[in-house]
Image (tube, rainbow, N blue to C red; front, side):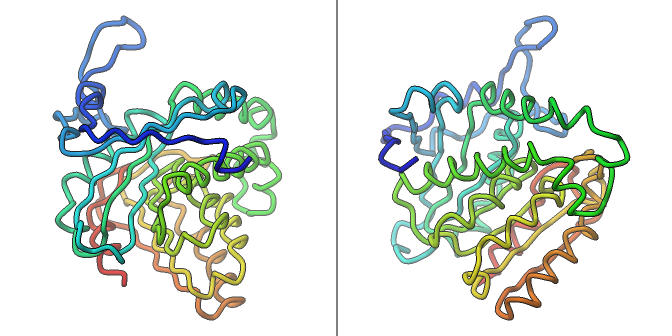
Length: 303
């Protein structure tokens, strides 16, 4: 699928439609209108989307629309004069709650990011479509032996979760095309939770990606995909942050236990590519399954 199969419509007006969407939602059981929360269950205040622009990315191909829905990307230009600076593209998890929670963290830390980036983009997936894809991947995975799915051996996990690996490979290819459709260059990726799994499968698709940052990322099965970056690994840096109080279960491994499984994979990459750099951090106590502001400070300081 080429980028020509995507069209992007940039609306110069503000992203007002997201103000109410990230403030109110429907209770799945009662249908009542309730306040929206982030993935940690914290109620969100109204976010200043009126100060952000909105890209709506539709697809010309009917089959693609049917499977992935419409992508929305919010944009905040934080330094118009800095034309040669990189841009930061943020990918949250697949839910609207995850997107809104990430927006809340990023919007509250723009002062940290403005000295490094020209602009920040945050991707909002079509929750219904992406959740359906995710659920479909787990139809066979859930039937496999519990001990196999709980294994910490990466090769065993790649086989046990092969449908999920294939899903992230596919979604990484699609999101890469969405990003390139917008004409972005010198892109730094920040993936949170399931968005980390996507980011690890976006980064090897094009040389426009020059940094990879991950917050409480999907389980280490997908870290293997970083190897696909190839020779560009000699110029690549990866920074990953977890939270000590994050008990989220990711593929039978608690999020706050993931660092010890990511480290040997990244060390192996470093042995093969001398220029490759990585930093791993666990923040204490942290802010559970969300982007930690301290990670954003580390990102801003990474030159």
